Image 1 (cartoon, helix red, strand yellow):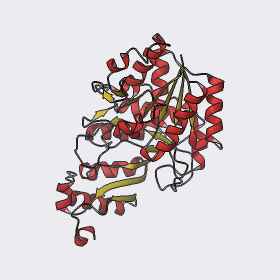
Image 2 (cartoon, one colour):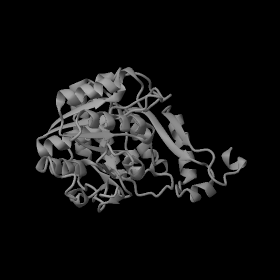
Image 3 (cartoon, helix red, strand yellow):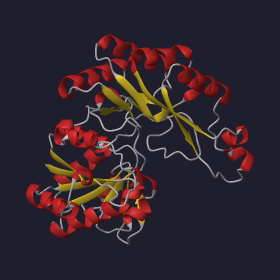
Image 4 (cartoon, one colour):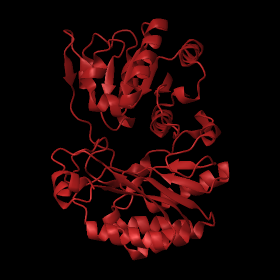
Length: 363
């Protein structure tokens, strides 16, 4: 089966930094492993003329299924890509996934160019959708069989949005193959800054875990509240392979909370220390800073510290409780002082303007 995966982007964004489309690349590798599918990936970010190039990809590749991933700020292009796909190939299956459809499936499905949207973690869901399309090329739309696929939202015959059963999370992340880096030119992303403030340079992003056990009120919760993690050995092996293949030593960890399991995090750092890579490690998505301690911070420094983002959000104990972040602010402050002493570049994340926030709390 031929499957075209499109990473939507915002053409109006004022943010120049970017990161490779890891979610789409994970989907691609999973589809190839589980189905033997022929997959192509296109990323709007690297296109000079997105409308024409998406149209050319659909005409030239003739996919049986088009999957489009996007953030909420990328919704406009996501729907435009769906319209292009449907205009060129009226019978092609068009599905969407990612943070935007997951957070607002009804808004996404107001677009009749989309057949269904995946909610949350997408690998197994997309394989199930692809198998349905492959098994019943002409009749699956009117068969009602979409409702049997867990983890999606779709429309019934009257146009009402219907939700299927939630899909259980993938428990063993080591069973998911590493991203299909061969399907993009990763060097295109070395022409822009990544998620860190380190600037333009060769680097590779890495995901080592999914989910977070905390319940911050503002969280996207795409991966759920149960922390699931790859083994330290698999993470180190992936980074050594990326070093061999692309010659990079600079890595950005994109986990929501990489250090929830202290011993696993320590094992990753020790494995990298023994690997001979001499890495530069960045944590642009933030770490759970009150779960760090002096031993771990000094270990990060010894192995190779780039930038650590500290997600404080608010220094008000009342607002910490209100948002259910519940940081140990004393521990966070102590850890920031130690990182500054060690000359680790430390970036703070703060949210201003909480409901009921006073000027004093803001300051």
